[in-house]
Image (cartoon, rainbow, N blue to C red; front, top):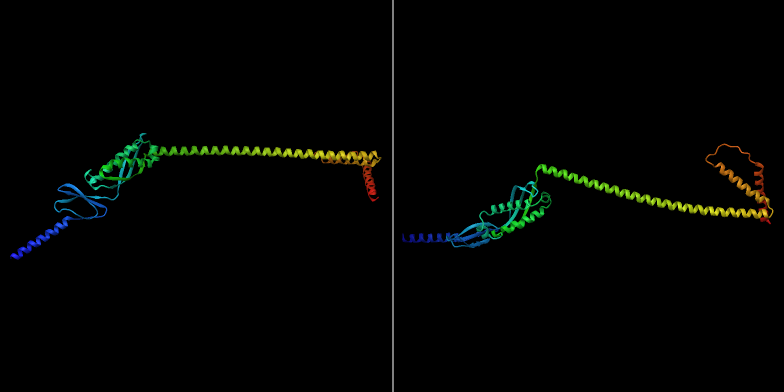
Length: 309
């Protein structure tokens, strides 16, 4: 019986030791950290892995998630600086970097961050006009991040991002903005159309100017050519007259007949080519014309005869 009592005591002691070991060994998962309290007072923080504490004296306080956390910011109404009522919602990303501060510096960390974010959204967006709220979302996000991150630093929290998801103006304001946008687009279209007409008129005027210059250059060249032709014609006429005069001076009357007949035939040709031509009868001296032609023949014979000699 004595042996059995000793055996029971040994077994009890072994069981107690095993319980002490289990109470003293704490395994912390990756991404978490545990705070340790000794008789109710914080002493240290347990990192991921196997950790040892004093059984029955030390106890685990808070289990803090050290990974980045995403939290939705519910929709709320905000009054802009120009008194426009809008609805805004968003999302905030934060990470606990000091487990002890996050556990003991603030009660209900998530609720505290949420309320702080919503308050600053009203403050920041309420200081801006509606047009700026709709067009400068990146500036709003950056300003909110700076303010909230600075405010949560004593809590051992790092706010990494704050994003405004949706900004919803009232329906009547949306319709008014649509009409304004339409008017602006029509205005820009009219300006572009007027600018196009102006450029077209300028190009047309430049083209007409260039055409007028080229036409004037053409008339100038034509006039120069006409003057040159008349000059050469006059020179030829003068030379022919001189030749006829020399022939008359040498006693050759046939040359004079040839000259007169040529002028006579030329005058008849011009009269026949007149645009007002009609059927007409004139007393033409046929004998004189035939005689002139005969004179031409005599001149030709004389010229050929001299050539044969």
